[in-house]
Length: 496
View 1: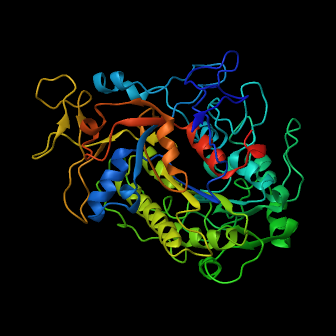
View 2: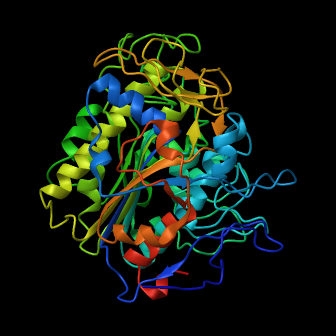
View 3: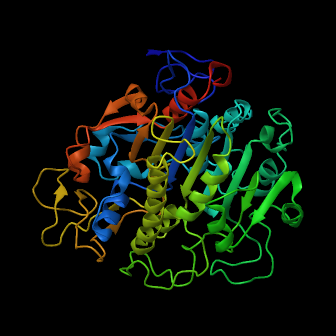
């Protein structure tokens, strides 16, 4: 394999002159396409300690922790329009200063753009360059290659991570404008001419997430609110089957869709406005010790695994393959609120969805298996700066100042295991995103190519997070996710 140079970026991690776009390692595969399908699964706001805390509560590791390709991933953006300039992760600063990672963090919109389009952009913008041009995502390019695409999330489908699969806007909050791009296949931004107004070459076949205007976050009927999908006309058009869409809303409809024949185009909005489960009554105070599931779950609600099975059953009708992003979106919401119990609920839901994908590929479902499918499991950024409590009996920590004494705000406390079914000892140090490395896992077709993405090594990674020997400390840049997906799944005519 040789490294190549593209028009958009050169092989470096730095600022592109005049554009503030950071570049990533771009590679050219000698044999062209290697993956028929790409499944990108994002645990929004997940950090190493999110995974660890959930493992301790469940008493077992998630299936993706056994994948053969594991790295850290840096997530920095290009900064803010008219504000600061983003900077890559610095292992030395991380080891020397507990507060280092609490500044310079990305947001989900710019992070998703880096993952899907391979370019560092400003925060709070969706596939939109500093020069005010719209970026074409990997998923959009996949439709031009004849593949079906989709986006699935546990939060509203116009939220940053799912909407960035197909949306473009200078503001991530322009829900209605980006909703049009999914429903009608047309881009409301005049400077983008990528679309034919027919569901992205008739290949955007699945959109699933919260946003149902007729239900609140407790899955109870409400006076309709259309803010998450733009306007009432959008809902009316989906009900009427505009552009061939079939709208489903109930748990039974999602379960039924997971097997057997399917419609060509499916819009799934379960009975929830913002989140399927997280935002239900009884959230609790920050750093609450409430156990997961201590308040009743919303009934008659599909979980992410059910939605994933349904989405794959629609997408795999296409013999040319598919590309899909599946998000556990409310892990981030729980970490923002510093609610470990709710975070673990959401992470368990995400882990079950990954397990369902692994089983799908193990079964060689509809001819899709590990030899022709690339599965990526990662996060867009860390949120909450979650660590252990540090001063409890049996607790361990990474001693930043070398004095042998744990000090809050100075040393990195390891999450302490209290046994399955018990809340591990954790403590949040932020209500926002951080610039920490996030865990990255890959398996299947072309997953070995991520080794060529390595941009650095944090020799203290295992010690800081109390990781096992399978972690080398190597880390990649998030833009390289686009590189590998595009180089593995698309031919040369559709990569750039």
